[in-house]
Image (cartoon, rainbow, N blue to C red; front, side, top):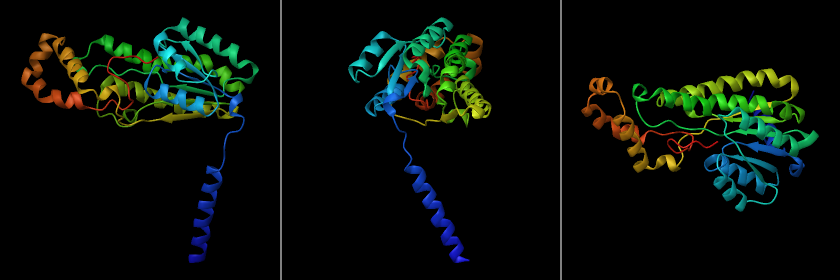
Length: 266
């Protein structure tokens, strides 16, 4: 019995060793398109993949962010301006990618662009905060994916969607968590539907990282601004004492995706 167990354990570690030894060849011929590269995870990923020799196509929301990224990377990396909330911007970016990848297709698509709504209880937020967050985190991600999908399918590539731990356990940020649950569901369905074409789908669920979101001064100001704009009848229901008591917890709650309050990284 112990011999069989030892053999199974040995086979398990042999399999792990074999899998870890697998590497992707010809990286210099593979294109990866990343959204949200002005800063944060997208910016870091673009720089890391560039160092590894991949052909990085980095989408930034601002020209300033694009210029800063180009100054930090090799000539292989190219940038494009993209607002994931606008169909015409997504269409233009897709055509731009087509011109560069040609018949090789797109080996990787990383949907990283996202926004975190201002700190506050669900009832305190304006409907605009809900709509803006949905447009960036979920609708924009879906539209970018559908627009780029033919290119990914041609290369039998992979799609990586940046979700959040709040897409698995919703304990804070009502609308944000809702969008990330949507990302999880969309990714899971897409994974099953694209298996036939050899396309891989992955979800990344970041936890709490030290970024601009950790700036207590900014988060405190954002929480106060949200409370200031809460309708009187709602404010009276909660009371100033409730806000004063809960505000420190609201300000210190983790974003879980490393993005600054109210700043869209598209």
